[in-house]
Image (cartoon, rainbow, N blue to C red; front, top):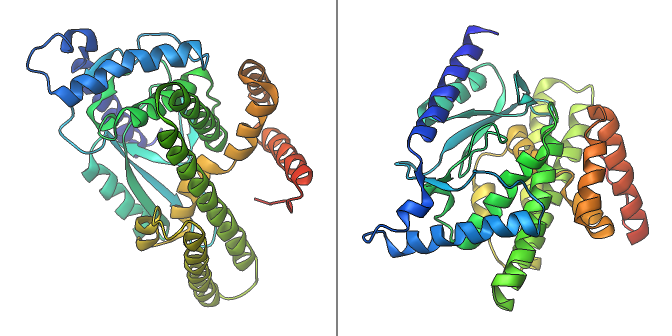
Length: 343
C-alpha cells in the first residue's frame, strides 16, 4: 500500500472510531425530557422502520441503527469521483474489505477538496459531494446520524433500507452492482413503507420523484454513449475537447425537454448548474445503471427469490455478472418494445 493509501486508511479509521465513541442508545435519548420534539419524533420512528426492514424486506436484524450520533457538519463524508478526460469510466481505488470502488470517501471536507484538487492537477475530470449516511457493511453497529434525519421520516427509511441492503449483500470490486442492489431495495422498500404508513398523496409524490430520477438516469446513460462515440474517434485532443463540450450542451438541451414533460419541475436544476464532466456522469451511473433491471427482477420473483438469485449472481466475476444483467435488461426491453441500450 502506498503512503497516500495509508494516509487514507488512517483518516478513515479515525473517522469511524469517532462515530463509534459518540454513539448514544436511542432508547436512552427518547427518555430525556428536553429532547427536541422533531428529533424525538424522527428517532421514535427508527425502531418501527428497522422492524419493517427486518420483517417485510428481510434485511439484517442486528444492532445497527439502535444508537444516535449528532454531528456538527452537514454531511458525514465527502466522496470524490474521477475519470480520465476522454473516458466515461470512473477511476477505481482498491482497499481491503471493500475491494475496488469507484470513489474515495473522506470524513473531513478539506481532505476531500485537497484530494480532488490533486486529481484535477493530474488531468482528471473530477466531481465531489457530501453523503448523508455511512456504512461499515455490518462490521460495526452503525449509528443513526443527524445528517440522516434532516429530510424527515421517509428519508430516514430510505437511507436505512439502502444501508442495510449493503449489509445484506456486498460484492468486492463491483460498485455498480452494489449500489444498484442497495438502491433497488431502497426504492422498493420505501414504496412499501409509504403504502403502509403514509397517505396516498405521499406515495404518489414519491413515485413521481422515482420517475424523474429514472428519466435523469436515462439522460446520463445517453450522454455517456454520446461521449463514448466522441472519445472513440481518431480526432486530435483539441477536437475531442470541442466535441465533448458540444455533447454536454446537447445534454443540457435534452434536459430542458425532459423538464417540460415533468411540468417544469426543476428536480435536477442544481445538478445541471454545476460544471459537467465525465466524473459527474460516472457518479450518477454508479448508482443507477442496473436499478431498473433489478427492480424488475423483484417484481418477477418476489423478494425472497430475488435475494437468492442475487446471491448466485454475486458469485460470478464482474464481466460475467454484467453480461447476465445486460441480458435481463435486453429481455425486459424486448418484451416492452423498447430499443436495447448499451453501456
